[in-house]
Image 1 (cartoon, helix red, strand yellow):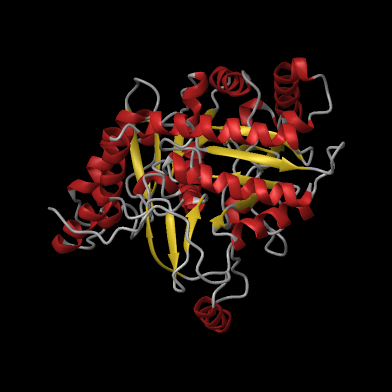
Image 2: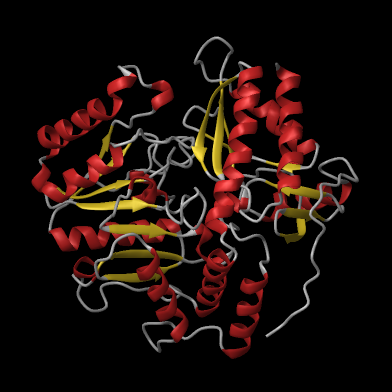
Length: 448
């Protein structure tokens, strides 16, 4: 079908203070109506969004460098996503796949089985969120191996449910006061190159030796069901493990009958200059977890793995009422088609070149930037007290406030609360990205 969309101009335009009067009034209602436990990255209320522009109810056009935390990779209200969703809503909205199956669920699973790394036979399971996908991956790995232990890493983030809070490293704000948590979770050292205290020339070998030694001595490899890791850590601060670390973990897992799980919730779907981040080092996980960018803004997540692992659970051991909802599946098929037909993997690499070169140029001028890191359209700067590696959370807050005031949405991250991360829609224009980066530099220069 063909629809006419009321698209927004891809320009930044600030017409009121941010927040404007209408957003200010609406946010009073938010305070009265919604849980105080909900955070807020920018104090505006959005009425429309298209590609990389958000329009608030005061008419401000804001450059989106967050993509709803890495969700709208194909742009907000991407045409193929919108068309598929409208067509599906007109056909039916729900049957529950485990009650009366439908083709959309099957077609998404076929696409995931085709697109994820590895030529082996694969099968997939669809659920609603990244956290739910992580929980199911752990369930499946434990059932398949008949082992209890799950190995995770420092600085990791895997979700906000009870199990995924246990898997997540950072206490505040994710875990504080919400325990007790699930057991048989073991946290390993994460090679964080910028803050590594050992010899950086041998960081990969030293980190692998440290991790495998702890597994052998403190858990027993024969008790480990899965090693779970983000190929680039998201909420932890876009920490990129050193070359060879992921392949080393994968090889160790294979030798010891451990299921190697890649959490690609934030790194997947053309975000890092590859369709999936593990492709950078040709790593083939036993299970891959995807969500966020999979469906162009609708709630969907997936567990994709080796067929023998995915088939190890008993019938009806997996499932859920809304998992793989037909509307979300239609959106996912539209998002996947957009990525492939518009060559968004290549576009992500191009965005990475603009982002990386601009951020590195700023780092050379402003010593408050301790490190630039990331890949493709997933990059970050870590802010420090100049001349040290001491985290500079105040600088981060000041720069983010400057960006917001001037119509650019950026997100914070990092274990130490001092990282600004950049997750623009992969369809963002060069001109819009460069405009956003100029605002960012103004904010950095103001504190430098």
